[in-house]
Figure 1 (spheres, rainbow, N blue to C red):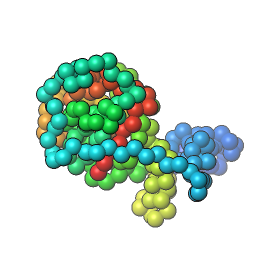
Figure 2: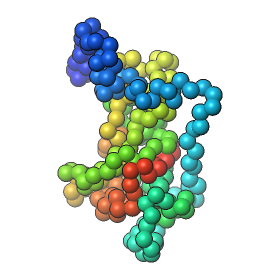
Figure 3: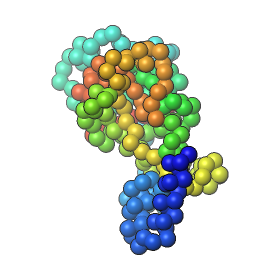
Length: 226
């Protein structure tokens, strides 16, 4: 709560004293307003081509080929441009696709408030919809981190709509820094017990996130379903 009032105070100070361009950049950086690069897409009503990439989920709740090494399932050089990921929150399942064919599933957990789409910072929800990996790198605490492009254009639309309908305070930012990552060393039991422990990121066992990390790249599509 103290953190919220501190941010609100800083925001009001910026509104009162900052030149407009600098103010906008600062507000954009901290998730209070739409980045300039997203404005054209937000204003486009007709003629815009929306992203279309829909996976066909594996039937049932089982994990596909969960005990088989990925290198045995794809016995040729992997073209990373052909891989994609489907995450099903209700099934606690992340599935790797190759040429839109499901190859292998992994158990996954989510933010501490797993029900519903992410709408703002601090709601502890995992975002839903079509995202992409915008960067990936080793992580000192969680093995690997595959950074997702939340918030994207659709995230902003949902965030602003929820604000306009009074679902939360206008001073709450949209949030960010969401990515697929592992767990603290020796904590794989978190995944086995389906303990939703993150601030909103999908979390895998370290051996699983390490395997997945080797076959994805910047731009890999990640579809997250409720």
